[in-house]
Image 1 (cartoon, chains in turn blue, purple):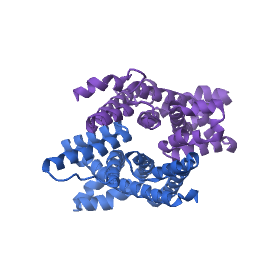
Image 2 (image 1 turned 90 degrees about the vertical axis):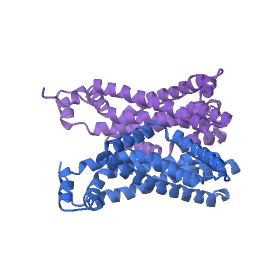
Image 3 (image 1 turned 60 degrees about the vertical axis):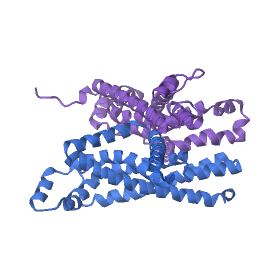
Image 4 (image 1 turned 90 degrees about the horizontal axis):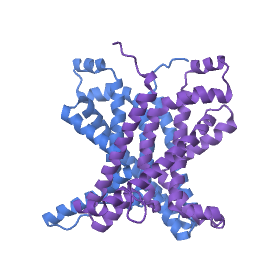
Length: 228
Length: 238
């Protein structure tokens, strides 16, 4: 199938999914940390987070990717040279996950910050008065309520992150884009294989749309809507 | 760093001595794609909110496909895919059009931003308050006149904050142009990186330039919002 390139393309698709899922986990963790720092942190902590989100969202992701990817390797080379050990090559997959995670962490920070503010402050104060630990407050009170407000933003960020993974082929990762490009070069059916890449991405986004629709229903439980 | 600025400063800004490069090219891509996207997406948005299936269905399919796939893949389809088709090579106009990286990049950017802008404008039209439309109908507005004098001006104004976001994202999207050999800011940065091996300086400089343009755009849109959304600002009591 696909002139014998089916397996390679499947492999590439799996790498794309892995990359997207792992980077989104990294960016959600960063986003939660960033949002907490912005709202509950000290003044300098929220200032640092402000700089992080403003800088990252003002620079194209491709430029950041090249900057971090090449910059990280070169700084590491300088360190290893200085210490006197042989060069350590950063694994492009891990570099990709960290870079994309770091970039979209900034977008998730803003999403979560908006959702955190939605939960009334009185609830948190009441929880403190009842002796809840910070982790308990987050897990039992904050998280289930803010998810309903954060979900559309999370959905949007996930789609953007998924589509951003197409850029990693530029820094040399064997993702679905790279696989289809190689197939195009091998068979000279460039048009067919670029369309295949587009179709695979469209399939991924359609599946994520369905999952997010289900999640939205799940977190709407217990909320009455105004009848218009 | 100073050495890089002296040698490549003008290339980063407008010219490498032979062609336009850097900021000039990036801004040209941005302005052309955003302006064409704006004007094409207004009729598309009106079709998108139509109740007639043959009108909204094609627009929905178009925007679903272009919002569901990465811009980089769209650019690859247009730049490296389409040109290998015999039908394109044998037609003089298509052959001329798709041979140029500039044309392919612009086409991809326009098609992409158009899909997003259509959804933004359609959302704003749907969010029109029914009273406004009913009042217009009561005064005898209908069809084109209703859209032209009531719905479009009101919807476009309220779409401004979301639309400004899209323009910033388009600025970021233009950085893909170098993959189609268009000499934008990032292409110069890559050339500098290849010539000097100073990756941090080369890409850092590009990052700073993009950041400055982003800030400039944000400031411009803030002013535009102040001007066109003044009637939506809460009235202060003193």
